Length: 232
Image (cartoon, rainbow, N blue to C red; front, side, top):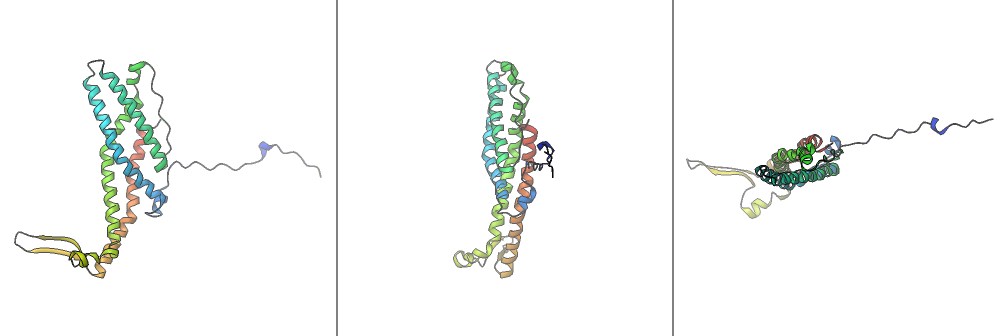
């Protein structure tokens, strides 16, 4: 039987899978100990010192440059501010890519034309704005994330160390509050029974499971800011 040569171009090939630009939400919901969840936590914790450094840089150079704008000295300071903000922005895009799975394009190059052209760098000014607007948000994200993590795990693991309080501290159990009102009446509440400790542990487990969902939502603001202010 004769066979015909089939052109290679006519042979159907498998379509490449689309590139996933972000970690799916389900990756975090798999559990608080998943790698995706810890990358989200790591992003929040590394954002805290970077937010402080970026905000200090932006405020210092902007204030100095604006104050000296009446002289020629202020313009090079503002150019340095834009260059520094661009550099920090490149680092932010890299962190967002490595920890959040967010793929973005670099902004347009710095405009030509000397100092005047550099001062007209829209992408640079957007990077400066990023440092201003994200500073309070990242501080809040850090506080919320740290509080949820510590509270959740400390309460969830209460059955493992509840014996410490009556044995070494002198409390009948874990102390929730202890205060005396103006009439001299003392108000105290301790988690000391099996059921009280178990119920508290369940609340802690709920917080542990909820934490990665909340943190991902917090980082959603960072994702939007990186796309809107630092990407091309």
